[in-house]
Image (tube, rainbow, N blue to C red; front, side, top):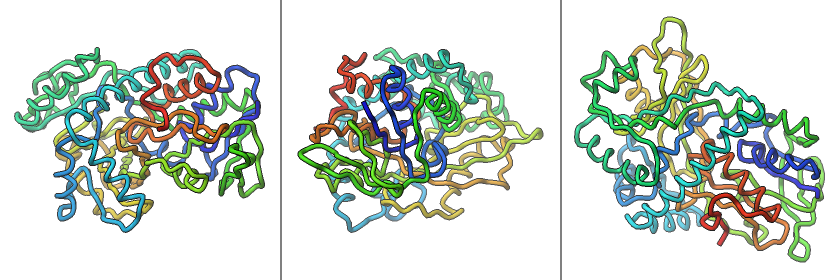
Length: 415
């Protein structure tokens, strides 16, 4: 079978790997970027975090979005836009912002994240892949007694589903992570998830792509995908800047750009580009970075060691496909970081980036065949693409090969 995969990020490459394992298919991966994993996969939070698989759509988020119209320090920020996609997606998202749907969506996200983490561990062992992985857990840290109490209560949702958690007071946090020794008074406590971890998603994806190439997967990079050609409810070709490509099966794994390609062929998926802000800081011998990745829950800033650097991410901005940013957009993130880790990295040499998180209203991805017979989608993993990638790819391969996925795939079907 000839298979064309559109998208060479962590989702597209893990999908190619799972499909290539059989060794019986001709697989081509196409991407506009000249390098593999050069967009969201390159600047994400670096966290493999089933312990943080909470649905974004929750009862408190509408109030945060409203505040963001006149305050720039909110973790969720909305920029009013006059386009149908924005208002349709926002309406669907707000509809999910109730306790019942939030609980259901959280459990579905968590199930996929746990499965995906197991699949990541399996691939890593099987292929001996190194990606700056640190498997010492993650700290979900709280600065006030009030937020700490709420965080502990919130964590029980996942703990009841088997997620390992430990509740730490401030002294125990400092014992576990000495980098916080000088700011003990600013810490109320933390929820520690020992099975979570960190790692370089871009490095992992590049290594997996090399394995795919050894299995005769073809890569067409720096190749713009412009349109799908439909003939009798089948895709007959994909138009690219390098000419038309014909295949038996087409898989769309273009992240936030997925709906732009699918809408002209009558598939209107509610995937919206939620802009995330990423900050990478060099770490030198004089610095004292944390050993364990952390989420500052009071400010919703995630940060983790990443080789010889410190990676921090924050903010979910609903602003369409605008990737523009200014240094002042990162100031709330830097204030949160320096308040906890004043000597963790070189704050005078920041590398500012933004990326588009392909968010669905419910927070779970779309994985499955579309109403067009030979068109398949694996997209919408949102802010947890790195955590969900390997599991999503295995589910996709199982569905394509007519096998039963190891976890319930019904919540991810296109409806």
